[in-house]
Image (cartoon, rainbow, N blue to C red; front, top):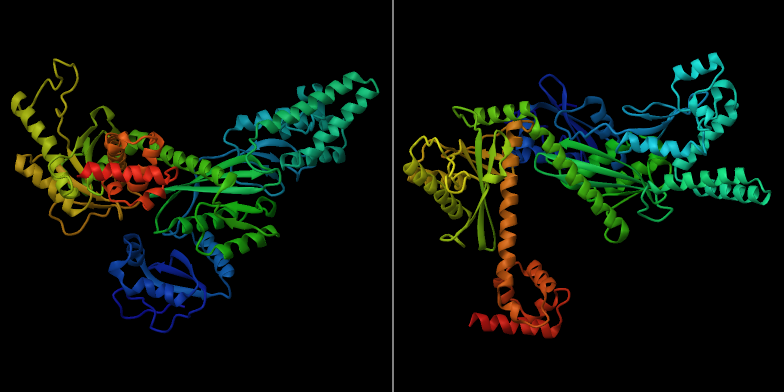
Length: 638
C-alpha cells in the first residue's frame, strides 16, 4: 500500500493509516525500485520516526528519504516472520541503502562431492553446489592439501578430476596415488562403488569432528595385528594413527571437546566494518572467514551483528548452523534471531555474548583478527596508485582546490580533563603516510582552554617556523636539506591542504592562525568524526562526500592517523607525569599499581581529589596503601 500526502517529502502516510503491528516496510524511488527494506515491532512507531523530524535524522537516512518517492509495508504475525520477510526482500530486491556483507577475499573450502557415483575430495572456491559436503573455510589452499594428504593414508578417497578418472578407466591403469595406496583406485574397479562411498562418508565424519572412534578403531586393529605377529600390518596401522593425530594437531584446541560454535567478531569505523568468523567444531578451530561491509545506513554494533547473522545463515545447510553463536553485541531482536536460526537448524541455537572464561578469550582473539582485517582492507585500497590518484582528485574537486593536494598535513589534539594537552601533525604525500615528517607538540599557553585554542597554537607554531625558514632561505628554497644534519629541515615543505580534526570552530581557528602569519596559499578543512562531514572556513553547511568516495576514505585515514599519533604521545606524557609525581615516594607502590591508579582516575589531579574508599576500589590497593596515597598527595598539594 502506498499512501502519498501533502508533506515536505510528499509521500508521508496519512495520520493513523499505519498499523501498530509488527511488519516489514519498503522505500521505493521514483522508478519504483526498492531502495531500502526494514523491519519493526511497530510499523507506526518506526515509520513515523522517519517523518517526525527530518532535520534531526542521520545524513545517510536523509539521503535515503531524499531519494525515496513512496513507502509500502506488509504486516506479519511475529518478529520471527518479520526477520524472515526482511531477509527475503533484501535478497530479492538488493536495496542500495541496506547493509550488504561481502567476502573480503575468496576463501577455499575442502569439498567432498557426495552427489557423484564415486565421491571426490577437492579444494573448491566460490558458490556452493548442491549435493557437496563442505568443510572450512580455510585461510590457505595449502592448509587443505596438507590435511588431505595425511588423511588419504586412512581414507583413500578419489581426488582426481573427471578427465583423469575416465582416462585411467580406459587404459586400465590407476594413477600414482593408486600405486602408493593413497587412493583406493575405483577407476579400475579395485573397490566397489558402495565401499568407496563408505570411505567418503568416514572421511566426512572425521572432518566433522567425530575423530575418536576412528583412532580407537585403528589402535585396536594395531594391537590385534601385533598380537598375531603381523608386524608389518601393525606398523602400517601405527603410521595411520599418527597421520590422523597429526591432522588433528593442525587444528588448534580452544574449547571443550563437545563445543560446536561460531565465534563472530566485529571491527568498524564510521565508513566500513569488518567481520571475522571462527568455526569451532568439537572444540577445535576448523576454519575462519572474513567479510567487509560499507556502512550505507546508520547501524549500531548489535544491528550489524543481526544483519550479518541473517545473511550468513540465510541459505546455509541445516548442519552448518551450530548449536551456539558467540557475538560481540546482542542483536536488537536476539530472541527472534535465535528462534529463526533454531528453525533452520532443526534444534535449539543460542545467540549470546560471552562475558568470561575461554569463550570470552577466544572472542577477543577473533576481534583482533577483525581489526587486522579492517586495517588490511584499508591498506589495500590505499596502496593502489589509481585509487590514490582518484582520491586526491576527489578531494580537490570537493574542496574546490586548484590542484590535487599532493601533501596533506592533519592536526589533532589529545588531553584528559584538560591535563597533559598535546597535539600531533601527520603528513600524507601522494596519498601515503610520510612518517619521517610526523611532528608532535606539547601545548603550552592554552592548556585547559579547549581544542580550539590548542589548534590555533599548534598551527601558529608550525607555520611561524615555516615563515621564518622561508624568509631565511627564500621563497623557493632549492635546498630544503639542512647542510649540518643532512636531513630535511623540520618545516621546509608547506602542505597543499591542512586538515584539522573537528568542525567549524577548529577550522576557523586554523584559518585565523594562517591569516595572521600571512600564509594564503594553504587550503584548510576540517573532518568531524560523528558524521564524517567536511567543513570549510566560513561555510555554514558542511561538504558531504559520497559514502563510497575514495576522497572521503583518504581524509578519514589522514584524520585517524593523526588521532592515533596524538593519543600515543598523550599516553606517554601522562604516564611520565604520574611517574614523576609524589607516588614514587610511597613504599609498596610499584609500576603495576601506578598504572592501575592511572587507568582508574586518569590523572594525578583527579587522584588527588579521591577519597580513601574510592582509591581502595582499585585492584591491589589496600587500606594502608590508600591512606598513604592520600597523605602523600595532600602533602604535595599544600
